[in-house]
Image (tube, rainbow, N blue to C red; front, top):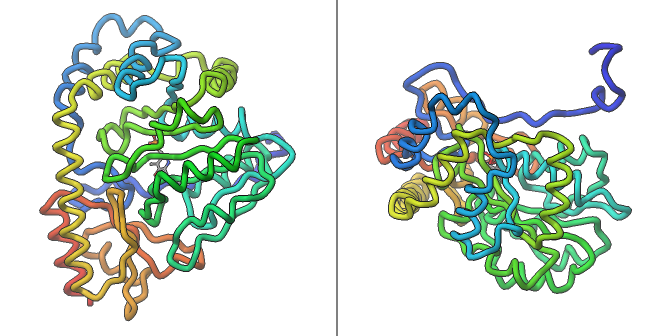
Length: 351
Ligand SMILES: *Cc1c(COP(=O)(O)O)cnc(C)c1O
């Protein structure tokens, strides 16, 4: 605490990211990173960009990257916004689009950064309870709001909402923006990006951190109507002209050009997920159906925090959240075949 702090700083409750342990040899299944490395072509592009030209500022518009994302999604560049991780994109969305009279709506169980941004930008919000099986019931969102945001698949549940439900939501919620945070959409879901040209109130957010294995490079993007994108650009240009560095631009472009690698690694993760689900079921866990690169599981006979501790003692780290409704669940990232085997072997001993 310091008397030099601005008033708002005293009341902030910052987001706490999953641990990035210093110790090697841990089976790290706690932050939904991809167990496979980035595309070798992305790594090569970074090497090529590592040159004397780093003395220059990067392109403030990251035009090449926006073009690659636009082409990939059959959109126009004017419909793309890129940021330093989708977390930054989200921050700008909260700042640029959600500060209105009515409250912002998001689920009670969701990405825990949303309440943090709400607090930072002083946005009133209302959390809407997921149903008993952790589904989003879109009828619960039929109320005055300054915007609606949720991940699809949701985090940390992994549950996917059907695209038809998202379209229904867009149809009845025409007076504010609906933001679909698709951090995990490439692991089996159907993206709402196909609706962008029809619905000027839709913003779809994606990241290169999960399905493209580039969490360390920090790249995320928003896709939506050019007017929404313009609003985000105005905030971005009032905050940081160069959020995307030259290496990140090169890596991102190369990643989108390597469709084969992307498809192969996503398929591997999804195949492993089905295996992990089956084995966890056999150990007596109850799981929420997952369309993400993690599963959300509880065991009726064992306390989740104790299981997390037991796993940790054996070198496997998973994520446990202390929020009431989910405190008996573990969020477990899908790892390599070997990592998943270790997880299951340790659980087999603990149970
Ligand atoms: C991982 C994640 C993000 C953040 O992704 P970055 O691009 O790495 O900042 C955003 N939303 C959800 C739901 C996530 O799980």
